[in-house]
View (tube, rainbow, N blue to C red):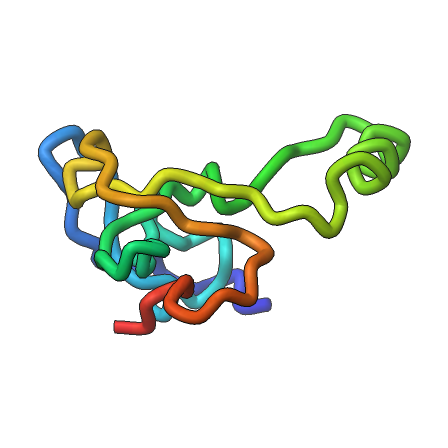
Length: 105
């Protein structure tokens, strides 16, 4: 991993959230707050990085318990307009449905 990678020059919305494509990020911790995606309804918008990253675990036992109850299931997260507030659709994580993908612009 390139630990000297510079933060990409993402644009910011009116509330200060960065937005853009994950393709501009040299590593996951430098991804924007709002990640460009295509919603299941075909609209292009942004999903929150925190929602896409999913749960955090405090122990291996927590991770195993989550995997046993939720592993393999799809999760639906909101897709927002550039403002990060207006919901314009949904993005299905863990889905193989066509048209639901991170946009690579």
